[in-house]
Image (cartoon, rainbow, N blue to C red; front, side, top):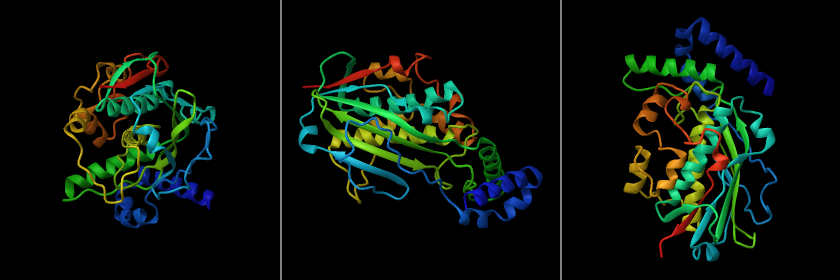
Length: 304
């Protein structure tokens, strides 16, 4: 089955090069065959414990989760360690710049989200909670197919009143694990998470990490919200984003000047770049320290 899928993807890529009009003709059938990338949960061995985690849940975004609400609601200070890779995940991303973009996207999302509620202070101060995040797997986006898919999408948007979904081949994905521990090193919150891009909501980008980049930011925000709330949202908890969230998504300043170490969110320029299939590196200036998410460790403290 795996080899058949690979051969089918090669056939699609060849067809894109040879005869785009025929592919457009059969596009609805192709979309129905497959709509999203499947990324299994992957334990990287970096959590202090996996025994507290729930059973796997979720269909598109999968996760195993642990939250100690009784402890989390009493937290006053939080230390944020920089995101890292396990070796096997790091080897799946060819360029150092792309690896830096991924870890920075997570760190920025964590810092921006926490700074809505907490005051961010430099690393080194005592903290009630320490957060560590590790990328355990990256499914690279097949940039050639993504570029062709974007060309089809733009082309059909010119002649049709509605856009068409992205080609369901060459989609990327991301797997991450993270935890929050107390000053004694006991686990207070933990998550093992994975998600793949899909044909309907994921923008095709001509980059090996195009999909993983978007998913990295989504993970950082999600885990941070779980830490803040101390519980999972209900099935019908569809709260609107706050003014702060909207402002920072558009590239506005974060709640703390120290979050500027991770750069501003790309905002409108990033959205335009994504809609045109541009690599994230074209619109995301990333960390102020080019070497270094490792040098950007922060801690956060609540205002009394």
